[in-house]
Image (cartoon, rainbow, N blue to C red; front, top):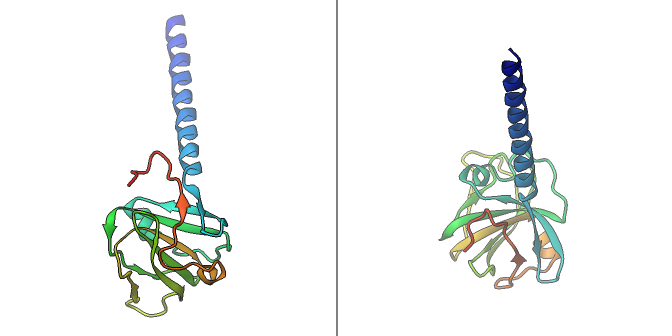
Length: 161
């Protein structure tokens, strides 16, 4: 009887430990979901990462605001001509495509929310590996130009190119 009680307590402690470890792991993952992107001027943008297909598909949908120093960085597996649309996006955005050298290869400024179906698509002229979405007006406010380079360090869990 005493042995059974000890086993139950041990099992409970193991389960609780696993729950705590899982929570810490999830919290660490959430911290890694945001990185700093440095514009050519040195200005910092806090960018939420969209790495998985589901995250990239959801993007900034249903968000009703975005601060001037915030954005979303989409990370793809390989360079290609990735098209973006504004379905269920409630705020106008600047969309900036970057190649594997993190140089700007295309900019769409002040892209409005989609009000019709189907939504129009926006596509770069050159292949990109990353796409940065910013609040509309930020590309102009920060004088972003083609072939300028942005700087950022991806977390270890993101496949680096």
